[in-house]
Amino acid sequence: MLRSSMLHHAARAVPWPLVAAASLLITGLLAAVRYDSWTLWPLQGTAVGLLAGAVGWCLDEPAAAVVDPAPRGLAWRTLARTAGIAPLLAAWCAAVWWARADLYGHPWAVLVQGFAAATVATAWVTRRRAAGEATPGQRWAIVVVPVTTAWALVRPVEEHLPVFPYGYGDAFGDWTISSAGWAVTGLTAALMLAATLIRDGRPWYRPRAGRPSGISGSGHRDQRRDQPVLDRGGG
Image 1 (tube, rainbow, N blue to C red):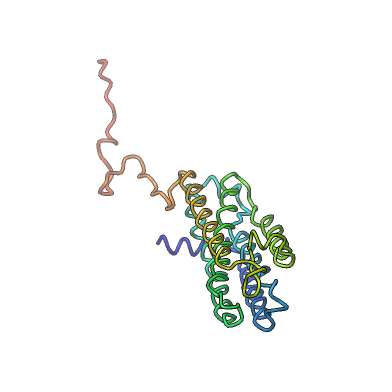
Image 2 (spheres, one colour):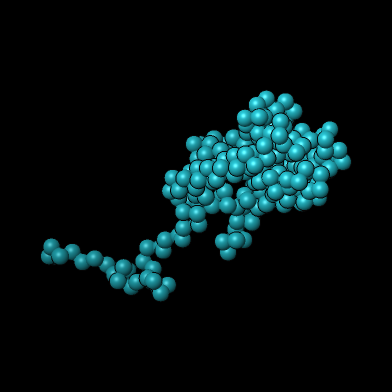
């Protein structure tokens, strides 16, 4: 029952056309990297940003004014919306696996980048949702995609902060340091997400409705409640 209600919520709340389009674009970007990794490598950073942007967008709640006061808490709605995040992560895994031979021997590092970026997106958007914003994921996507693309193209401080290492490393960024940084960032974001959901305070399930007055635990009406109250004052 719980699973079916979550799927019903996800079917209506998740922007499925966006999920499908983003999944195809992510696959296409890494296919381009696979075709010519040396020239088109910055598209790998764009793919990471696109994944993060699409994940954040999945967590928006345009009907926040109606949904937020409901008994179901933020944790329940976030868990339900992972039905839209799962295809994006599946597309990321499939695309990385397909392009693995042209990722300079670091497919696992690229895979970690995507999962860490998705976790950061989930943590930030959920935090803004907890603060009452209805659609923070759209603002997140509008910023994160061009920023990651620009960073992957320019790599301003790659020797000291290797966000998107290039080629076999060395002067183009250290892959080991980069993977460690992404892993720490993802774990930190996961802890922030957990703290946000715990602070929300409402249960992740839908509370059972109380029994109507006069109904006993066995489902039978309590006859004592139907008896008239006698005036003990006499007369």
